[in-house]
Image 1 (cartoon, rainbow over the protein chains, first blue to last red):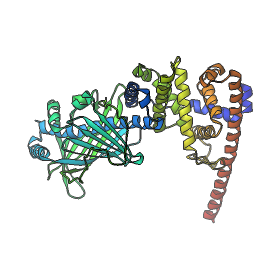
Image 2: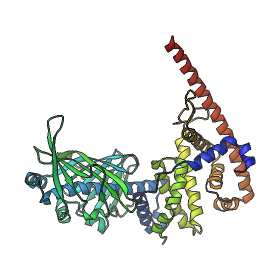
Image 3: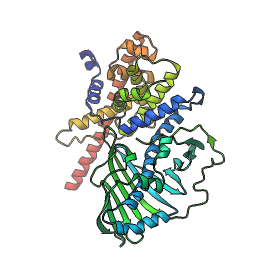
Image 4: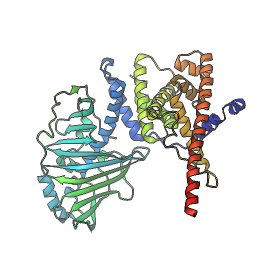
Length: 292
Length: 188
């Protein structure tokens, strides 16, 4: 602003100076860039007539970004189980029963809390059974993914909107079943670091996993907790998993926590039913690509 | 087909900075970031984008201003500003950082309240340092009209900031009076 304008608009001049001198968070994060590019490329392939309203497109991009991370999160939960199956390090005897229990598990449900950089944490409820993973984000969206067929379905109850889709080949190749995970985890390491007693008397064996599986790309275990798994000494099943890692060229900090595990729960009828519910409008889906 | 990977990676920092400057938090800036590129996708279907930086600045500014208007939709002109820290006059001297944050908030509110096209012209001209001709090209206006809109925007923003300062001062005065009363009561 000119000197004359600074005299004419003194408060505004001060505000402009303040806003120009405020500090900025480094950004965009690599996850934001990646998910945006993926969504733009997917939308750019579709013909103009299939474009959705802006709000729908925007929400789809956000959902895609979330799904990418959620898919990764679900994979990690299984990867951890797989790493335990293959670990030949201290604690393997204790793991024997864990391995058997996990192999025999019909399914599990758990809470996923994920935090990307300085973004607010997001919580979702996940479960899997018979090769289908179901993730629900705070009542806003339900995402199904069938690990065998690659079929996906996103349901948005508030809008009565269903978006069926198909995972890309690369995404489908990600380990979503325990068997797949076992193939991936031959070089992973884990060690029993301590046994703790919870307030309610439950004893937990705590294991540390030293590296992320290869399909996580360039992700690296980091932070204070790194990659830790808490296993109930009595049931020999995981109760909590915490993964702190950095990903992407910008070394974005990603914190994932899986908690409140319930193994072999009884799911309500139709809980994994990927049929579009009555009254839902079907929209064209996007090809899901693997999280980078 | 547009090389979105290259465009997002090349211009992403510019879009982020434009969004963050007006929204001042990561979550809103992230939403705005994606909104802006969705808008760019729509635009690229209709016409060839010749100058990506200026176009993205314009789209990001427009989306960020929309978010600001949504954020402050329910705040009336006469209310104290939302989430605005009150400076304690009894303290030795308010820090410059707090004072800056306060007036930045005030400007955000003011931008959400003036005419949308004025706000857009103001941001593109003052923050993105586009010339009147460049703003005119981006908004499909005449350059001299941009000059008029810019002056009106500054006048309206100044009026709002003055009003908000008085409003804030009133609030602070009330708080200080209450503090003084409480202090006297405690002394007694």
